[in-house]
Image (cartoon, rainbow, N blue to C red; front, top):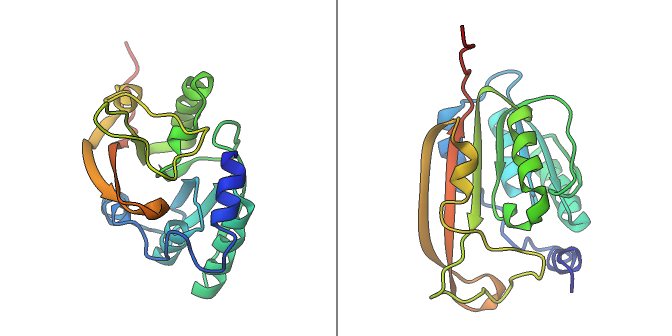
Length: 209
């Protein structure tokens, strides 16, 4: 079963698979890049839209995409219910294209769907589409020999190595980076994940004289 089918099925019910409460990490991003007229956000892999809609409620202009059409349907529904606008559409993290630049770019639970041959191009694209002084938040699941695969793991997901994510941001200002192991119940059975997270800021690099 492909990731496309898995998440189409998980998001097919009227109830929200991940709930509608926003991720706690968003408050940290808001503190680092407060909302203001014209501030823009890109949510890569928005799922059913709980985080994208929350950022729109805070006053950002939000663009969001996900591979699952049912996820985008529910993102737009939640935005209507909250009386906000989110520009949401279907796209693939491996091949997406966006115009313009963003003040905040974030992706949670999606970067592990990058195919190995697309990683370099993805991070180059990420740099181009982030405004100077903009914030990027990414997390990725990390392989540990003492942890098994979670019960809802997809065949196209790929575990990363500890610290691998951080190597792509050597020229950025690191606001936070960490690795944690936590318990989860998605998929119906308790299990553990190891996750690397980076929050970084794009800074001007002075021209060499």
